[in-house]
Image 1 (tube, rainbow, N blue to C red):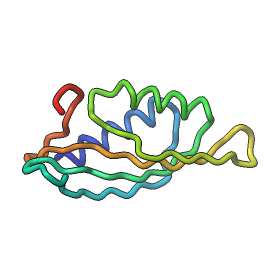
Image 2: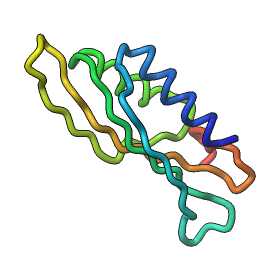
Image 3: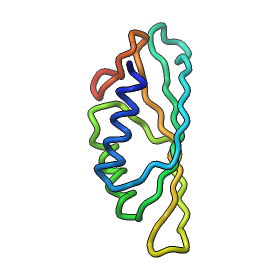
Image 4: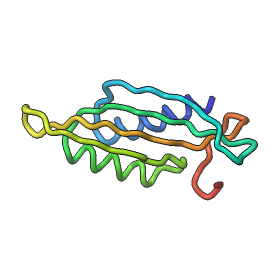
Length: 105
């Protein structure tokens, strides 16, 4: 359930910003020292413009979910003003499958 909620939020933000997702990989791991929290890691590749990327970062910053950006790389493409970007996300998820939202940490 949490996977789907987090993935849907990331997809919503990408669509809203105009980025096109190419592929994504997800995995979950327990958070050391916590009995009921897990960390959902995601690495996704996108294509779009620099402005699309800026809009996406704005969307992530203002998302109600606690989605953290761990790493971003971007490379210009030969066609127009397009860039390819790879983004590694992390989201905190409760053991009961509910994503943690801002203010709940």
